[in-house]
Image (cartoon, rainbow over all chains, first blue to last red; front, side):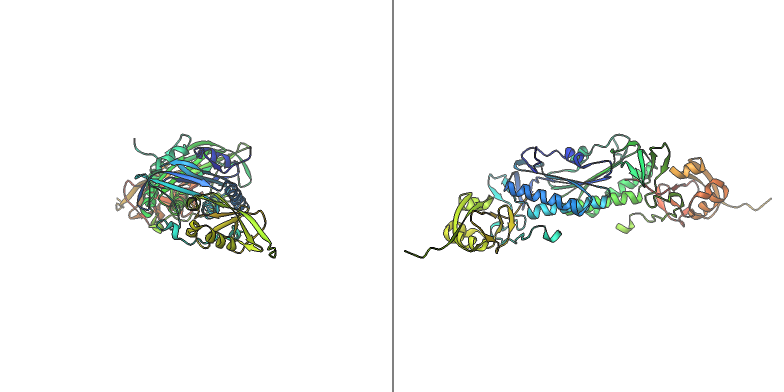
Length: 158
Length: 158
Length: 88
Length: 88
């Protein structure tokens, strides 16, 4: 089975942690992003994540490879797509390293790069039945924002 | 039941994560420290953690309170004592926050403070049947080290 | 008989809000060669009236790799216009 | 009859390697008043021969709170000598 970073299944954080743990890596830093019940002052009922899947998979693989090159770490990453309820995990990252500093740094790197480079979008459904695409850069003016180019992705961090 | 930070039971990371997650806190950073199979070039078979329990509980409570004062976070912390096998979790920390930066910072703070302030010791048992108390500051010269005082614990971070 | 102009035909992929605005997920478009991502976006905004809501310099990818405005386009390329990323 | 000297009696708690070296987990010790943590450590190292392996300025706690060498001692205090911490 080819590893996939995107999944429609509920994320299993325990499995993710065990997948990177090893007897020579003493620290595991992890990050889990949950669906919040509000955004920009509106009450969120559920979320719908979609992706440009082939590119998202490739970017996730590249980010993991970059982290594992830059630090002596083992990285596991999973992002959910489809419909999510409030409180469910949208993303989970686990990073095991011989020393905790490296685990924290690499974990932070992976979530920041994911947000910067991986083509995933989310639509929020509100209590009043309306919905909107989320622009994390400018939550109140999503459509008017001039996008900053990602450019040569990863180059900054090579 | 009074909450205890020290436990002789296996750590349940999933419960720890759920205990801090909430619909208004979107990010959970966590750290899990595992028993490694080697230390200072020797093969470790198992570990024995002991504590000055009343002080360790009080210091853990103080660290959690400090983190929750300094950042808008909810912190869960558990440290195992007694005999641990290689690969088992010795410490687990989960920190939920509205934003991931705060979750990472507070999680890092908690593990660093725990190592600096909480009176817990570990004895390593090696493959050859011998054992030794671990001094993380100077693993090769444990007994000769002049200790630096912790002094007014927490003051540095107030 | 007019002089033949060499063209580049690419497939444009639209996602999320952009797909909603334009009402479709793919568009095939032919551009005078040589062409860049910027040329493609300009022509799209001119040809499809609904496309005027697109930013003048959206995030883009060519063949599933992040691109810039001056990235060159070749025949058969898949060019994705990426709304503000919202993963994580 | 000698002049009476006021003393402070405290309970010393030993842990981990320190307990191993000294062969016990608690020691009761009386010091001339006023006394500090530093005075206690000095007297311990003098009175118990095995205690000479203790650092001259070990980590200490008084009544379960981190202390320093000049922390004052009162009658009945519990003074813990803490080997290098190794939690986490």
